[in-house]
Length: 517
Image (cartoon, rainbow, N blue to C red; front, top):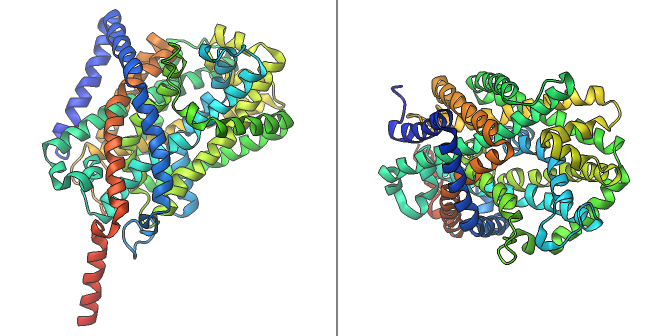
């Protein structure tokens, strides 16, 4: 408790706790408040998410080719904290990897059986199939990773090269100077804790439903509140134990296991699934995605009063923004010793390519099964999205082996993601975090782990998949405003990196001392 930043920790913690208490004591009031706030968000702020996401893709590419691209994070003499392989594995598995294991099979069926009304596509038609697959590319490739990459890169440069404190406010130092580390900085960190708590609860809700679907398939236990509570408790205990071991043990080991399992399951489904159909549909849909990239990125549905973009694209962008601001502290911290261009490759280009491959294989398989069988839409309606994943895997050879393995992949994926998130939340809640002493205490990780698990269980118990979307949307509003500021801070740095890079001054001082000696 002595190391706790009270003005950063208590406001978001008490706010999230109050919401949980209200949900237990007055369910109707809780649902009315969250639904009303969510409806306002998706009706009024969706355009901000769309424009911001597209802008960040452009900035990512621009920074890669700028003078900043050649700068080494931590200075010219900085030695990498992680090997390139470990760095990529951790980055991939601690960002949206938990999401792709659930939505990769479930989401395409939603778009196939119920495409946007304003597009006049016939459900289960060829046009709906192409729309569905191309939408997976929109939601799971370059745009989400650009949203993650920009804040993480700005924090890495601010923390290691500008010698700023371990605070999300440091990302705005190029715009506001050291003024950001006063009361406004504490308020900013508190808001980011709130957004990440809701974003992580949304992701955990998705993983709980995914795991419950697997347990239901294997044991016959009903996917309901009691099972969700047990799964939440097991997952929470595991990621708290992992988080307590620190970066070089828990996260590194789990991410390496996770990455290898990802590669295995991708190759397996590609070889035993409808390979030709996957490749042909993926090629055609990718062409559609490129042709209509700007139109799909900026589709709000306002002209036709179509709610589809609000409940899908806005949901995803809000989710990414909820995570991005504070996850930047973790992703930036592990980038020490690598160049900015390498950072963009590992945090933007390679994960986006991986997401595209995953969605081509799993989304293509899902669409094929629905187009040739037709029962997956019925499964979605009768049993929920968590049942779709395992129904699709059941159609594969060796399903009795693959389904338990996939269940393990889902479990490890979320534990790895939660591990890194708790490290970031614990770090921003604590005093004395420096490059030399980067780990927060276990107590603060336990507190946040229990709180988030409780919120996730409450929302899926009362609102299921809609509850997950509400959490993401509510957490994304303040986050997107912050991230827009971070984008302009990074642009300012990219124009003249030497003006902000204090490691050059230190290197120059060392060289002078060496010559004098």
